[in-house]
Amino acid sequence: MTATGENFDVVVIGGGIVGTATALALTATHPGLKLALLEKEAHLACHQTGHNSGVIHSGLYYKPGSLKAQNCTAGRDALYAFCAEHAIPHQRCGKVVVATRDEELPALDELHRRGLANGLDGLVRLDGADLRAHEPHVAGIAGLFVPQTGIVDYTSVTEAYAAVVTARGGVVRTGCRLLGVRRAGGGLQLTTTTGIVRSRHLVNCAGLHCDRVARLCGSDPGVHIVPFRGEYYTLQPARRTLVRNLIYPVPDPAFPFLGVHYTRRIDGEVEAGPNAVLALKREGYGRFSLSPRDLLEICLYPGFWRLARLYWRVGLQEYARSYSKTLFVRDLQRLIPELGRADVVRAGAGVRAQAVDRSGKLLDDFHIVAGEGMIHVLNAPSPAATASLSIGQKVAGEVAKLIVS
Image (tube, rainbow, N blue to C red; front, side, top):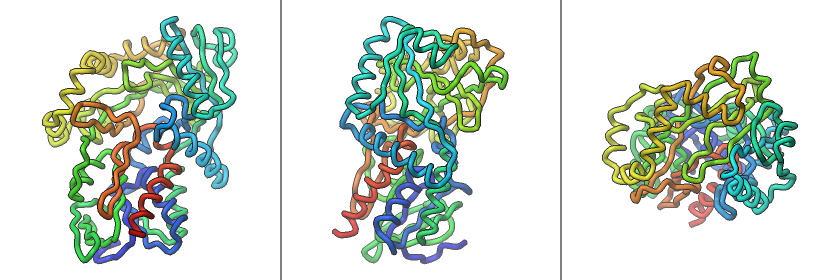
């Protein structure tokens, strides 16, 4: 379908779960709004949304009062309700967070405190015997059971969001890449691969390319997206009984990611991972994927080198795990010692869009910036899928301010 000279009130860039949730919220709060969602790929949810582990997060890890904490807990409940209403397969199965060493107990205590501060009820502190009652094959000295955690297929959720948007009169267009933006006639003129689109307002939910879209719009995002690839193994069918539901380690406070863990997916498969290695391509799902442009941009960004000085040792360890199945399995054996090298096979990977500021700091919280006629979602890593309905409502609220101004 050619989009030549079409006029809209709002255009959302990006057909992942945050973009579709934003479109969903806008069509709910502004009936009759002329809205279009533009996605460059042939299908929705092709990148971060379609490559994650499918976990519905509880809100356990996040600093109380942060955008992640607020939106995860609200979004989680809304997501469960949406899945029930639209008959999307999901399961509220709970998870265990496992301490395997005495040194991890203070961090486990802190997680428990954060969970309570974030409104999680039903948290249960576990000793070793309690842990094995939940997960018989786990080796740990203590743990925490989190009942709010669940599993779902986020591609199915995204498609359901989009179906509601179109039923309300919104336009969802795939295969439509944004090429340029300029101000014209009191609004915005968007040049795309399928033609010209005009809009009063623009919402940037472009994920791995959100900083580039912000620059196309004439905005300085103040951050650069540094992509991190997370690689997974899957358990052989005969060994899936090693895992009942979800098993997580106590996160290392010196490392900005959660560590390798076990996830029983909604289709019954059991995944193990991910690690976190610097990706040399923003959509680089293979170990040898490389984009000269993406790599050059990383190398020219001063914030990356400041980040590298902080985490170079951990980064080398992650690369070693990427290329050594033995090292990867050794980490997994901390949680389930009887897991063998032959019990897992290499599976897929995802790429996380991580915003890094000029000082080299990884942005820990969601980051949403309003500009003249525009809203830019510039950092929405995990738990953004869980929080998507809440994030969408927040962004829709920001758009409402633009509409009335």
